[in-house]
Image 1 (spheres, rainbow, N blue to C red):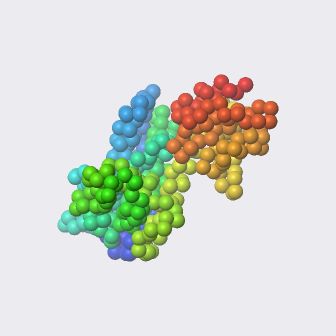
Image 2 (cartoon, rainbow, N blue to C red):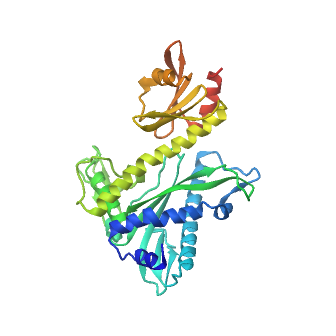
Image 3 (tube, helix red, strand yellow):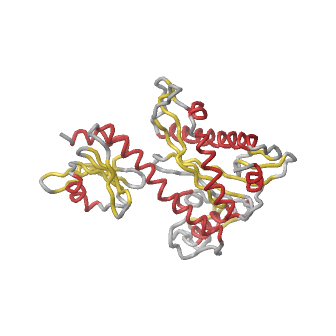
Length: 361
């Protein structure tokens, strides 16, 4: 990326679909690579036995804090890149108001150019609950995008710094904000609850509105939850466009890869704690369905059916098979005498290892 390309694309001089593909394929990979450098991540590390709170409430606070820090660091690195490329007439700025978007690119005169909402999802979070409920009227279809950063903690050692663990951004997904909001609205409006009581759900000038038994109120439930915005094959679609098709493809990739990334981190981490040997992939239809090590295996329940527990155990020569849901609840099956028996159901990840150790010889 030379300075001229950076300036042209960040000024939203191209069409939205092309801008989205450029941000996704060229710009953010460079920014994320710099974020993941030791020199950048040292500022976020946990050192000398420092711990993150284990209770759910404080974990949510940590994730919110990390989301803000990642957002600020991405903007800092972006401004650093602009200066390196000799671009001094535009810059990334923060939006002080707590509203859409988070970051704006401005000319030195203050004119707004490209605008980005940053959403940060921790891979292993059971409920990846980032929200996108900005109304269409507040989104500029030419300039506005949503960038979703998938991140988690890594204990990989540093060559220079003595951290215990640091955050790593695995991937950033870029979605055209207007198309994403159109998908969200088409899905939500065409799936009203049965309890409307003769009323309607829709939007007023400020926010989404729903109805419960004839009483209207601000919608505070499902509308805008980032990973519930759209389903593949939904029949009521917004008007077709290049930007919409691009956004749908990227969104569906996000849905799958966000769950898979968290599953991989949890499964491999717990198999290492079990200390049963090297970790190998379990494949199904050419894709990774799980992981095994020694006498234990972890598989995704959305990919491999529970009824296949005995077959999974037999084929992979393991005694314990853990089926993990998309929210990472684990059902544990013990394989003995040619049959698999469920011994634990819907166990939270933090409790799985101790239960499995009791079941293994």
